[in-house]
Amino acid sequence: MCGIVGYIGHREAYPIVLKGLQRLEYRGYDSAGIALYDGKDLNLCKTKGKVADLKTLLEKEISTSGKLGIGHTRWATHGVPNDVNSHPHYSNSGNLVIIHNGIIENYDSLKKELIKRGYTFQSDTDTEVLVNLIEDVMTNENIKLGKAVQLALNQVIGAYAIAVFDKNKPNEIVVAKLGSPLAIGIGEGEFFIASDASPFIEFTDNAIYLEDHEMAIVRLDKDIKIRKIEDDSLVNPYIQKLQLNLEQIEKGGYPHFMLKEIYEQPLAIKDTYRGRLLADEGIIKMAGIEDNMKRFLNADRIIIVACGTSWHAGLVAEYIFEDLARIPVEVEYASEFRYRNPVITEKDIVISISQSGETADTLAAIKLAKSKGAFVFGVCNVVGSSIARETDAGAYTHAGPEIGVASTKAFTTQITVLTLIALRLARAKGTMSSSDYRRHLHELELIPEKVTEALKADKHIQAISELYKDSRNMLYLGRGYNFPVALEGALKLKEISYIHAEGYPAAEMKHGPIALIDENMPVIIIATKKGHYDKVVSNIQEIKARKGKIIGIVTEGDVNVRELADHVIEVPETLENLSPLLTTIPLQLLSYHIAVLLGKNVDQPRNLAKSVTVE
Ligand code: G6P
Image (cartoon, rainbow, N blue to C red; front, side, top):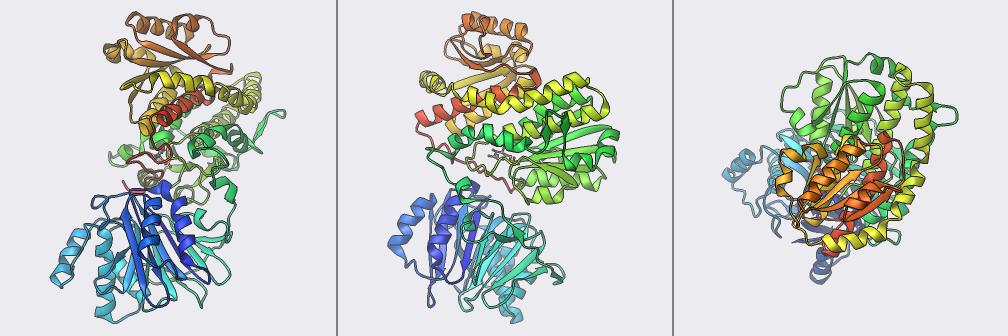
């Protein structure tokens, strides 16, 4: 969590750092701050609140000039969100200034030591401890900043992406990384530092992504030197060509990123299967699978690890892998998996799913699985992310940047990739007939058009949202492939409208949730034609008998549910195992409209962050 940005070069740093922070607000937005060096003085401004609040305050309070600057947008871990705990943090002398994304776990013992040595602290943060530790090492050993950072970090337990500079040596910024992401953009006589490449995409497409345990001294007059923090050994920098473009990270006329991303799904799904799905030839090509086909065919089982929405995509994948490829699948919350001494063997394949590729628990689960000899396959959206690098092989979703905190296109593109994998394995294992396989390929190719159709219900969904926006609870039900969609629908509503919602398998309703149903309880029930339709219709009868308000997600032309439900929202017909790609669309729109009508901050819901890089 938290976003960090830095600039050193020939341009004014402030606009670059400010814009960069706005682009990184998805990583946390409870407070923000910027430090600028104007050639003479170090000016710092920080505040509780969003980057927009910082901008107003900063432009009133300090000079915005200077060609060296760092900035931070925070998601609080140590210390409540307030002005003092916001970053950047000064060292006691006022010479060093730091920004940090991560957690220093042993900060308390380090802090006690520093207090004994006369250091004082203004904030409750672990970061202020780190900057003073660096200063302490620097003065005691009489060494330069880079060396001091290295020695200090060797005393630290935890995770960090840091940028620190010394106002007495304003031609360099020292950066280091362990567990949290850090990219260095390389321009002509200028450098950019950021949690991801979005802050500098209009200036350069050359970037270095630091690996864990690496640090760099970013100096104006020299080439970048990257070193291992543990032993000071030099690492060859790998300069990557970025593929991101500016348009992808702007709203493009939509009022919110979430709505833009919902509407991008037809294209995002197409981008996911482009070049991989050759329906007419009956071919699925995925290098990560082909290169490891033997392992997949010999696997005893697949264990899927993920968090949040990605975990829901994993649940959909469980149905599809077992159904089509007949491989046993277990789906685990990464945060539980990593701490419960799971039984993993070399014949297991672990598939980790993550939009950001940075989720701390998912990363830790991968490391655990690898240490036990399992083969780990990653399904990620962010190219070059930590999970993409940590896994043995993988497949990108190619959904483009997802900025709205509530995940939408990441979910449908994850399901698309996982469906391609299941189909490819089913073909290789011979668990599907050739005609059924081809039918699936052709139908998958039609999904983007059908998503476009499903999006046409937007106005109708907005009208339904108006009727239910003041509900205190909502129940989401689905069966089979659409049970995980019900979970995801409920999560979307909770995340952005703060209305309590629960997702349940429709048949389980009788074992508890039915007690909640009365005339005030809206029940969103997915009742598409092929998914145990008759059984779901019986569930609808049971809800109706208890006066619940029924919103049915149905297949185009449905008659039975329409008669029973208060409202229906239609989606085009498709194969049952592809139906989550369509049924999820109205649920995304419903949560979006309810949150907008309630005046909530759709793209930046309270307490959440897009990328959870702390456990
Ligand atoms: C956070 C986000 C969710 C996301 C989850 C997992 O909670 O708010 O939208 O599903 O993390 O993130 P990942 O990047 O690993 O998919």
